[in-house]
Length: 463
Image 1 (cartoon, rainbow, N blue to C red):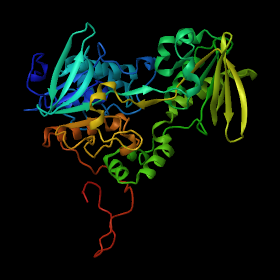
Image 2 (image 1 turned 90 degrees about the vertical axis):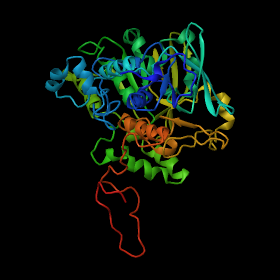
Image 3 (image 1 turned 180 degrees about the vertical axis):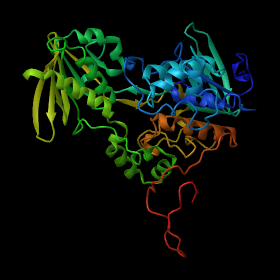
């Protein structure tokens, strides 16, 4: 396909410029490709697409079905679907016979790279350094530079931020990151880089009860010899009260529908904040398969009366950490028992998640953004950020709106639907239909008409 987005010397404003090319902005680029009269450009500092490279271990799978690709949930006829990727690589029969619903994580990364390399609107080695509002041009001015130092500037009527999230580690570990501790105190985002050296240590502690923590734990367990004698002793600590499976019931998954987003957006802020904390199993739990694999590894170690060289401790909070000779001393507290204890370990892998990143390139625009009381974006139903009224252009965000839209914000299931919603808003017309009613569940009380009894509309009929 060809697109006017590919012109390097363009002077007219783009309809939309995307900052960052992760799966979510890549989804928007794919859905916008070939739309008549709509010109877009997507910029990323990386030399090529990559998705969580530190966790692309063999055997790990995507936690959502393959239909949650870049486009299918919004446009199953798109040439950028995962199924078309398989066809392009002559893998359709192999995929069919594998009977996979959840695909390898490494293949999802390869699929996204395949799309990013072919979409004419995607430009890599282009670090966005500033997004400003140009009153005279009535457009955003987007400045970016290459790794060689070449600086370019384009204008856009609208901008979408898809810069992703940044790794988060507990405060006690932050002073130990980098320097002499590199490869010994790290976030799970860097695990694959250091997995060989970690596997050769005597003792490794993994912190965090989510999918990443479970996968790191499993990988290290598998590095022990068959009798468990070799490889590191592996310890798994987590603040959550249990190492719990992610919610994956058919009705439970309806929290990842437009219906729930609409309900969540209508709640008071205090209720939204509480729900995000309470719903951790919806998006921070572990797949049942991974938990089962960990249990199987531990069970193998007990055959013939053996003891597994591993320990699992839920309900534990890290209080302090310090270097001690060739290792580290972690001070931990079990909150339910009110007891404090110490752990000595050779290395710490912090699988403690990610947080939305406010990019530095937005600094020139910061005074024109209507931040909430906690310094977060105020985001409407079209994922548009509230701005000063003098800004006539629109700024959108992807995966920075959990506080306003709920736990589906980081989930790939809603990626194509959200991208289509933004595309329709940015184009000023319905490019792709985005039905809002998709769930059997009625979130909230049924609406009451004073003249008639309360009724619940059947699925598929908007109310």
